[in-house]
Amino acid sequence: MCKQAAWLLLLSFNPQCPATEQLADPTRPQLATSLVQEAGESLPRLSAIIIGPNTPHAVLDGLVVKVGDMFGDFEVMAIDPSRVKLRRNEYVVDLELLPGVKKKENKVR
Image (cartoon, rainbow, N blue to C red; front, side, top):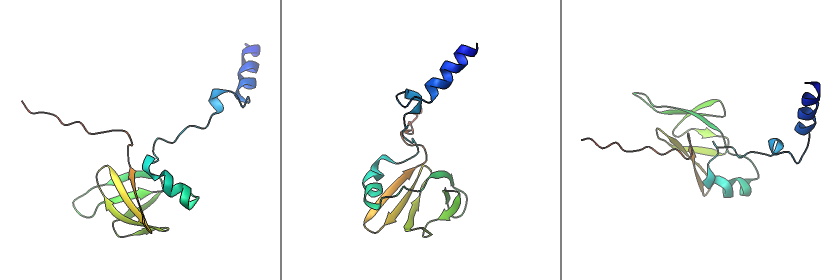
């Protein structure tokens, strides 16, 4: 048992070990790569969208914003049930709440 623990500990510090590889963040929008490279910084993390009877809100990096608000250098352009559109200068970025997940239409019989 002690040998197994030692091997696991040794493998966890190996830089060639697949467990130490940097994984892609599935919540980051794929289309925003050029903006991130141009700006040299990361995009805000979209963690929630609140759609109610009044103004929709979104949670970016833990802060609640609405359409028209500024978030750092970004202006919040639109908030939809599954995405938030931000603009900075000439760049427009869509932050998806669940990237890669598409809503499937149900046919009524």
